[in-house]
Amino acid sequence: MSEAKISILQWEAGLVPMGLMQLESLTGNSTNLDSYTFPVKFVQVPGACTETIIINPSREVLKRMIDIGNDLEKEGIKAIGTSCGFNAIFQQELANALSVPIFSSALLQVPFVQNLVGSKNGVVVITANKESLTKVHLQACGITDDMNVYIYGLEDAKEWSKIFNKPDESIDMEIVEREIIDTAKKAVYEHENIKAIVLECTDLPPFAQKIREATGLPVFDFNTMANYVALGIGNISLYNQTEV
Image (cartoon, rainbow, N blue to C red):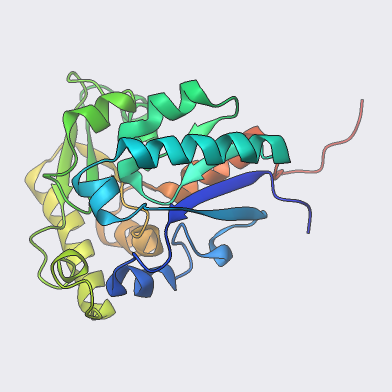
């Protein structure tokens, strides 16, 4: 296997809730090596956790991500992603501070997807917590007020919410899967103009295919974004290229 050209910044070990560790075991999760068809390098960011990324975004953690990014560039890494979509709030600062492409959040795909489906149609964003996903996060990823974006959070899903309310308890994965799919189906039912779904949370991609099957809509997530970046930097190829 070739040397990694992409690095993923992840939360500090020991600060990850039990439920998230269960989700990380699923192929498709941003922190699962089996989710990638190309080599990646995982790097933990000291202090990165629910509190410092989602609830109260930390400037100190941002500084650590920039410092780590600079070191990774020196090692030859060509693109850097993060394992939590709420890092969207730091997208512009990270991109401006580093020299390689930064993909902090699947939200970066929303403007692209809005253009795919047309300005009159809608795009659903499913997030871990709607209240924590602010306008600042959206703007940092190029999402503007004139876009038809509908945000649906999982904070009221009883089993899912254990991840944040009872971080030391395990979760029932079958129930969580139903909660996620039901949220997607509810969004489609409530908005007839929805033509695509974007999963903000990097723990949701393992359920993307079942969401596609349940709604009949295209679903974009961290993995679609990561593969797009990998193609762009030449980390993977869809066909055999020959020299001309």
